[in-house]
Length: 200
Image 1 (cartoon, one colour):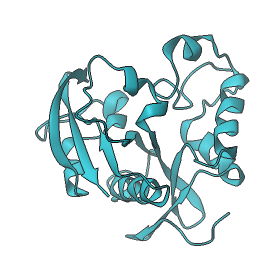
Image 2: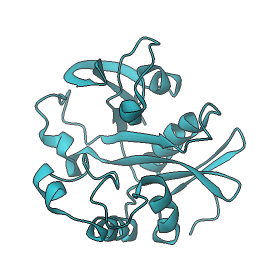
Image 3: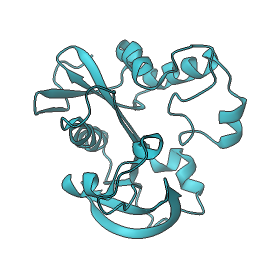
């Protein structure tokens, strides 16, 4: 496990989601009941048919396998030793976004995608989401990504339903240096999603 964090900011550190941190991944994206067939941040990582067929603890074991790969499945934010946040980041070519009919390809650049930013209840409003985005970008850069994309809602300051808040807001990403690149045909929580990008 690297001792040096990807990001150290506002009292938080961000690290890649290595296998040694798998229990922290479970805390952030795993269900309370390990036999439940939900979450694990797989719905936008793997094809929908595979996602629907994967049941119970098999889902967690699949994600554990991702943490063993050279490219980890995301990054984790910590407040001291306590895990408080998760962001999923990966090459877009590995994701269903590569075949999306609603989110465009603006060019042939081998971009990475950030598609889920999650902060634990009780820790929100402290800047953790910003640290997670910064950490996801830093991890993509470490892995040689030429640019990072995200597909947040353009909510113009309006409240976003918590069930859809994981996609992030345009402002969150623009604060991190992302630039509006294209509209999309996707909608989340009643708001249009936009494609924003940061060159590395």
